[in-house]
Length: 279
Image (cartoon, rainbow, N blue to C red):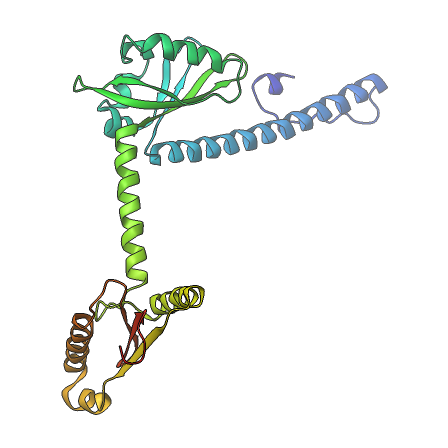
């Protein structure tokens, strides 16, 4: 009992058989209690380690997120603020910790934010709240807030997103997608459309020609003796020759609907809608 009291759970009692039965029973019970305590201590340690790993992973995710993640208590006092607040709001996490959201929300918008946060206590899902947040510079940003109320009156977890920054990021993403789409349909050497773009254009114009009963002409151009020229002059000169040919083909197009592409190697193709053989 003294060993248990000092925190030593490895000790065990050893009562010889000649002792009274009640002492032997007490000995067995103490040993069993000690084993249960050791097992539960190991389970608790394992659970604490798992919780620590989970907390570290969640913190890493929060710190890597471009949106600001905030954890508050039931009184709306901030208990955690992710590092993204530096980039989005201009504050360090330490400057916002312990503060109340009414300190940074535009006075005209606070009643809306307060009512929406109160609604989160009963609604598992609520629409995003858009309001003005005072940046550290003093200017107001339009912020989108989404959040959840934690069960057991533990407070809120909310995310803040700069709408202007988001809109700019979406524009950049759209432009990047547009450029990628162009590159996916363009021959990198000559700048003409590639074989994939030609296949799509041919299928499209062929369907239109059938639908309208109009002629469709196709011109296939092959650079003669190109392999010999390439072998003698080298690949760089061969590439330059292909670029000259592609410019000549492109400049020969007369109408917006005319379509030129690099068909493969030294072959080029021109698609001419509404054009008969003489044309």
